Image: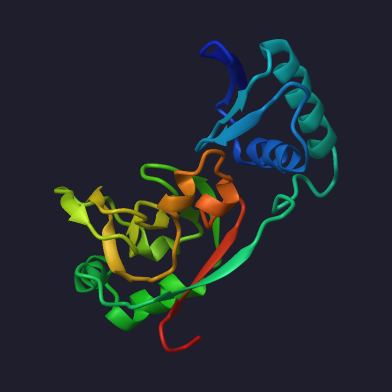
Length: 217
């Protein structure tokens, strides 16, 4: 773990391994360190806003020592984590190409995509876009060589070892499996004077997601 200043009022806890990240996220979800106003979850990092470097170092070391010394290791889910079932129309433009690249049938691709229970590792790229861990290794594919200029909101896609859902119209290089009407980002709420993240974004780091073909719910 590397602890370093980030701007004039932030501290970045960087180069975290999966267990360290889980421990610290678990503690942050329960309560913030003294003087910490908010935190931002990165892929292998956590950004603490409003806390000094020394305080962040002490807090992080205390949390890691507390959790890592336990026999069971870090908790698998942070407090308040929620579970969602996301209905999907498996009609994506890349579905057949994915099947060919993975040497599977289309039905097998859909089955593998739905078998996993995914965890939200982080949100990023676009507002509320979830990087979902848990994709079956048989569906791991490099991103497209030529990204599309526009991918529609609600597009359910895979890229590398992750699954994801596009939240707004944007360019993108992931492979599209299908589409969902599941709402991930509320723009009107985001424009409020003091928006609440849980109301703006449907998913948060640590939440669990399962995909299910529409009509089978």
